[in-house]
Length: 72
Image (cartoon, rainbow, N blue to C red; front, side, top):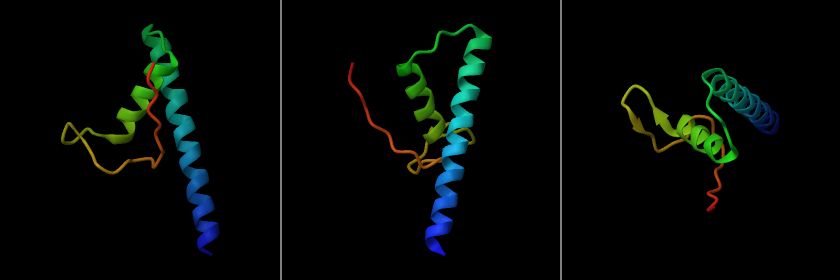
């Protein structure tokens, strides 16, 4: 039973992440902002950890994604 619940949670998280990325791309295109991979990663990181109620970064992620930091 736990395996099925974990699978559904993983699927739900991936779908939500995809929707957030598509919304960011759409919104940036609408505002005329050029969006590259680096900007998209920064925006996704902020969405993951930013708490709008307090205006600070939270310790636990909202969507549960793993992040890899790339140095350019």
